[in-house]
Amino acid sequence: MNSIVIVENHVRTTILEPAVRGVINVLQACAKSDSVRKVVFTSSISTITAKDDEGELRSMVDESSIVPINQVWKTKPKGWVSSPSLKTFSSSSVAVTPSKLQVYVLSKLLTEEKAFQFAKEKGIDLVSIIPPTVAGPFLTPSVPASVQVLLSPITGNFQPNLLIKIAKLFSLEKR
Image (cartoon, rainbow, N blue to C red; front, side, top):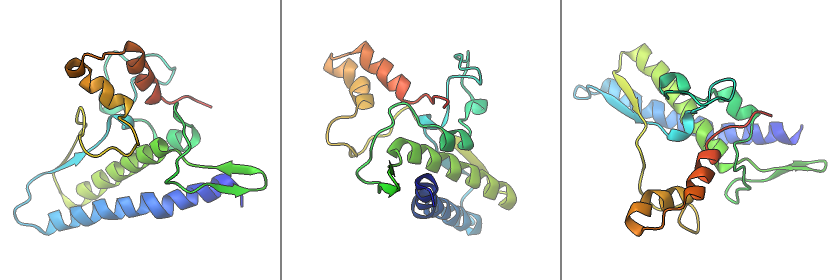
């Protein structure tokens, strides 16, 4: 079995499928409840793109700007990085480590898609929001670049090149 298939199977079984099960479990509980009137799904800015199919910037980013799941599987986001928390798989001479960003985007896209399917089937009023930022403990050893940009008006340390770097990180390049 080739390394890419092994990685995809590992990501599906250990990350994506449990994430979907978790979302469906929450929605099942909501469907059984007499008091839940609306469910809000917290999406992510990483699930949308400001570029159209030709790679040109869109004049407006909306629901039609969702990054297709198959595109995330087939491409590596700019900023593709090795991830110590994700297992490296190898067969022959090829070693493959999935990107944290790619797996995160896949997880968010897939869980949102399945949540809307389930909500429609069960008559649940579901909406999805993309918050401007989410605060919490960092998954990195240093302050992430996105947080540095967000704090720059307070710290006075605005770096335009850092903002460009972050924008490129969240755009997908076709391979």
